[in-house]
Amino acid sequence: MACRICQAAVVDILDLGSTPPANLLKSTRDAEQDEYPLVLQWCDKCGNVQLRDTLTAEELYRDYLYVTPQSSMLNTHYEYLSGFLKQHGYLDENAFVLEVGSNAGYFLEHLKPSVRRILGIDPAAEIAAEATSRGIPTTADFFDQRSAALAVEEHGKPQLIAARHCMAHNDSPHEMVAAAASILDDDGCFVIENAYVLNTIENTEFDQVYHEHMFYYSIRSMKHLLAMHGLRLVDVTMSLVHGGSIIFVAKHDGAGELAETARQYEAREEISLTIPKFEAFAQRTEAIRESLRELIGNLVADGQRIDTYGATAKGNTLLNYVGLTDAEIQRCVDSTPAKQGRFLPKSSIEIVSEETAAADPPDYFLLTAWNYREEIIAKVRNSGNYKSKFIIPIPFVQIV
Ligand code: TMP
Ligand code: ZN
Image 1 (cartoon, helix red, strand yellow):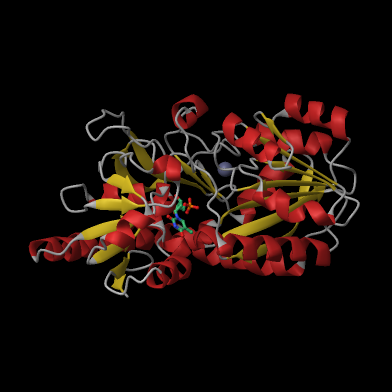
Image 2: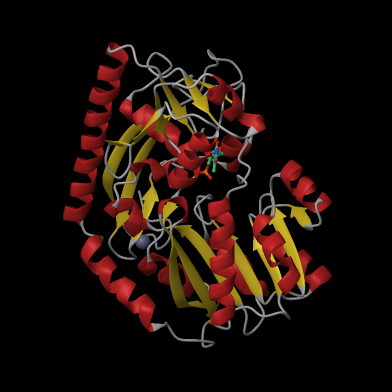
């Protein structure tokens, strides 16, 4: 097995067993699903962390139901990100912004009043059509050199290309980076946002590992990848979304130098991305499994009712690795209408609406959408539910 960025040899660092793809919700409780291993690997040559076994887009997205939630935390994030880009001269009002993997188009919608032109490109046809009807022009397509060339024919070269939380969702990022490099304006910026491997490791976010996440980017691996396509990393900034994310800013080689702040993060990676640190990460992961098993086991034996909150991909990794099913957990609460009435993969827990949960609150919520912790707890309390306690699984098991 080789590194899918630089082709060097890799070593295994974490094994979470086998699960079905985390976003393939079942339409009946007993539906059969294929399971695939979740094993992480490390490439010491380029600093890449990757998933060993990858699935094709067809296997992963055939029944894809992810729609970005309407979240105040995400709106604050869009505010921060656009502010950062403007302050540092990476974005101005004359820019044509192309967003890859734009989903429902909320980030473009946020940018629309302050830039010259926007375009989204996303393979999920229904979501793209819906975004277009809301005034966010979105092409239903994969982003590659062919679709990139078509976009340029119609709209000209983009001054900013954004790829937020989608560069890990393909077994090779090379086509996407090559496509971006081929159409980016001479002084334009390619902005990539992704969960940051340092947060994943340091905060024991083993539940970030699922089949859609084929790469766990570091500054080192991103620099390496960009350089292979004539691009250069010039800046990074950090954000709290999705459990700790990094925003990489790249330009054409020769159009800028790496900022000093990025060098400081790079130095941290030297210390934190090492085999002993990965071993400690794997041990903390097992410790979370043991304490959750014990806690939930005791609560169930005590006659307590437990629901999970958030039909998230990370929640499915967590439930299936810990070994929790509809035998212990009654329901999974989620605000996405398309998910309600379906069942979580493997654990077979039924998904219900937030209103259903509010009408009949459980004793405990296991917060599987812990990245929206403050927002969800406030929402539950504001709905008049002061009864349910929250079990937060990550970075360590605690009850609040
Ligand atoms: P994500 O972490 O992949 O963005 O998924 C978040 C999931 O949590 C999504 O399915 C919607 C759900 N959710 C709620 O049910 N209520 C909420 O208030 C928020 C913010 C998210
Ligand atoms: Zn490598």
